[in-house]
Length: 127
Figure 1 (tube, helix red, strand yellow):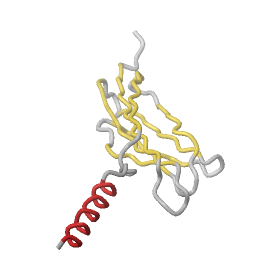
Figure 2 (cartoon, helix red, strand yellow):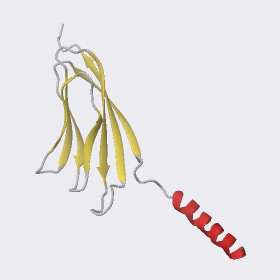
Figure 3 (cartoon, one colour):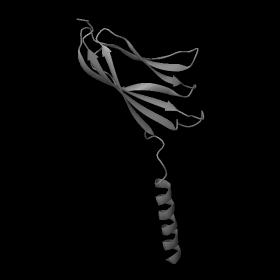
Figure 4 (tube, one colour):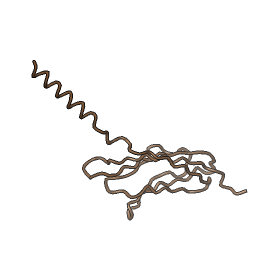
């Protein structure tokens, strides 16, 4: 009986320590970028360079856009977000991007950055 109790205590301790390990799938950094552009203006945001196992994605798409996408430059390995508001749109918009970096090729990416870009779109005509 004592041996069974000892095994249960050891198993409980092992399970407790294992479950307290840091969850690497959770975001490690969040950033907010505020941008003001004119209603007829294109906007680009360079997310930086990425390796073969790394990348970026749109996790919450903008609402009022003609153009809102990520593009990977195969020559420089940079990923750029491109945005253009809907034609004649004046107001606010927002997009949320997820960047994943620091993969060793065998495991998941250890650095996850959530970037929220908040747009203020103004009248593009000069009075």
